[in-house]
Amino acid sequence: MYRVLVVDDENNIRRLVKLALEHVGHEVTVAGDGPTALELFGQGRQYDIIVLDQRMPGMEGLEVLREMRRRQQSACVVMVTAYGTIDLAVEAMKAGARDLLRKPFTAERLRDTINAAARPWANSASTNSGLIFGSTTINGFRIEFTAGTLKHNADGYSQVFTVQLPDETRVNCTVSLTAVLVELVKVHTDRETFPGADRFWQALCEEVLANYLWQNGAIDDDCQLVGGDLNPGLRRFVDTVLSG
Image (cartoon, rainbow, N blue to C red; front, side):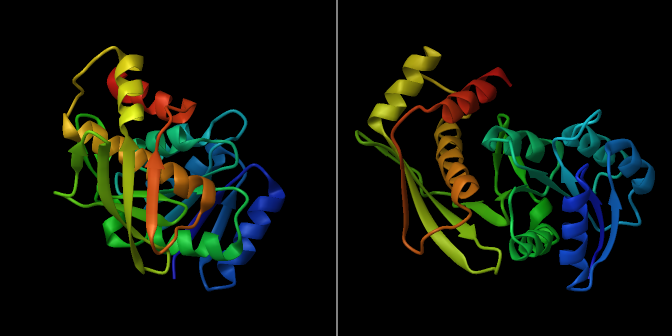
């Protein structure tokens, strides 16, 4: 069982999360704002996991996350939000979060996410040209990059990923980017080459999959996803990668 610090400015949320985690034996401390959380956190050695809400008055969750990671690099933080997009997930992962949990969530999803975040692989992300690969986690689902499976032809790109579910079962998912989407990206950015070469398109495939998991919180056994439109979320992702 884990020692958990729950940080949320809503009293009802704090109470419900505390009850859900204590029900399965976790030891839970609560805080209603960032400064209080940091005071309790100290150097971070007394907590195994921090459940941290993003939108709080005065000091937002990302700011608290960065300070916790500054004090204790191995701090295991699960960010929680009802408002964020996948962009927030990318920013939170870069700042050191283990997972991003979307509100509203069930007690079971909360507990699954806590267990997933605590696994050793959850802190093994690697980066290339500012792109995250290898341990993106969304709603307790882990996206594993499968090397050597990128395909590129006249129809666009496709990439195979393995998704580890909160119960530790694994599902393969093929994500395709249509030729139309590839051209839209090139027109939007006014360029033909991209940082990391194939890595850029692999990251865009991963973004399509992460968005799907963020919106649905589930995945089919026979997962086939197609990215065909440069929607606002993908456009922001492309702009963020190129600006970084």
